[in-house]
Each structure stands twice: as C-alpha cells, then as structure tokens.
Image (cartoon, rainbow, N blue to C red):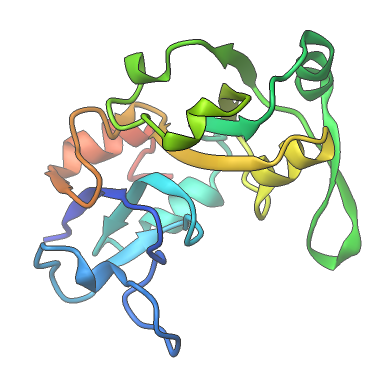
Length: 198
C-alpha cells in the first residue's frame, strides 16, 4: 500500500536520502520512512518548506508530466525594499537563463508584497529583518531550475530566504520545520489535484 508524506524541509538539508557529499540528508529527519520513499520534486539545500515524499512511483509523472499545471506558492525574503515598478516587472514576466543557456520568460501566476509574513508562516521570523528587505508571496505553475531565485536576482534583489508554503491544497500549515505529516491516499490525491487515472 503506497504511503504519502509532507515534510517541512529545514534550511541546510538536501532533498535526498543518499549523497556522496557530507551534507544533511532526509534520513537525518527524526522519522522512519518506509523503504522506497522518494521526494517528489526537490528543494535546494538553502530552500525550506513543503516537500512531498511517497512510495508511490506514479506520482512524479502525474504531477510533473500531466496536462494540468500545478500551483506552487512560495514566501520569499529578498534583500532591500522592492519598488512597485520592480514588482510590476516581475508580474509581467522576467527572462531568466535555464539549462542549456537558453532564456525563458518566467511569469508568475501571482505575486504580491507581504507586510506580515508571520501571518502566513509562523516560522518566518528572521534576524536579517533588521536590514532593508521585502517579503514576497509568489505563485508559479512552472518549475524551472532555481526559478524564483533567478527571477528576483534579475531585478537586482538577492533572495535571502525561500519557503515553499504549498502545492495546490497541500500545505505546511501547522507543520514545524523538520517535522513530517503522513497523509492518506485520498488526502494526498485530492490535495495535489491529481487523478489516479491521469
């Protein structure tokens, strides 16, 4: 019987169980995952938040190769205060370089400046907030490599923190960093908006 999990991945951990490098791994989480568990998509070492894991081998294909695009929402802290003009540039689309050296125009489904990040994520408090910064809420349906970081850097704002809050209706709400929540098959498929028949 397949099993399904949400992990609130902490900072400084890679999204895999095995590595040839001396890095923190998913196996270092205080949770016993069943054999055959794998991450669906990844978050890089410095990114935090929602990471889906499962023993269901079909899920990655259903989510990433299906006809229905899947919304992912990120809470992003960037260096310096962002102007309305710069925000508008991000809304209309930013060319970013992707694998192979080609350029892709990244257009978010939604983007807004957030004044109270703690209202969205209880663990958003950050010591760097004493310096000029901006919190953004960004929703995408595409997932190019390091897309969010590249988008904000293209408008001269370095990404300081990147937290994936949700994918469709699956969220890390109420799940502390480093903590796992197990879902039933129905909860997972309904929340991810995928059909087993896809």
